[in-house]
Amino acid sequence: MMLLKNRWALATLTVLCWAIAASLLSGYYYYQYSDLTARIGKSGLTAAGINLGIDYGNGTRVWYNGTKGITLYEAMVNAGWEIESQSYGAMGLYIKSINGVEESPANMRYWGWWSWTDFGWYHGQAACDKYVVSPGEIILWYYSPTDPQTFEMSAPE
Image 1 (cartoon, rainbow, N blue to C red):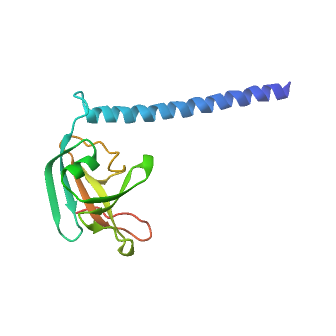
Image 2: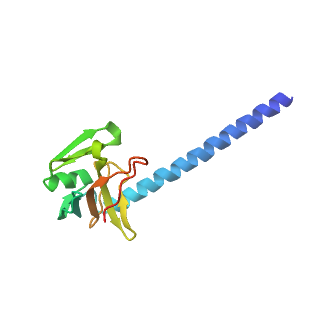
Image 3: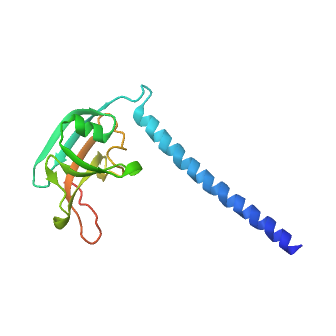
């Protein structure tokens, strides 16, 4: 009889864990969906005008204000940039070179994109072809020095 009670307790615990995990995943995907629909807006998926810049890490910063695109990558292409990238399938594109300036693993310098917020520069957490831009957003590609021990990129100034 004790074995039968333990089986029911184990089954109940398994169902409870599944329900908690399913609820957390549902909440996460609802948040992602809400964020995407807020970015797209009620008018549908249209190209947003953003302020797009490049900081070459040598004191040269060039801005392309009013650049249009649905994704960050599309805005980069529409700005006329020469881009070399590598696709990682569903994870998106990795940018290796912008306008002839290539990443330099020997010098620990890599391209990364940053978005301006009320608190300063925020490092982009998605591949540029996966990120849907918002109208008026300020995005800067920075040829960033990277810490060789932590691989953390330095924020633009």
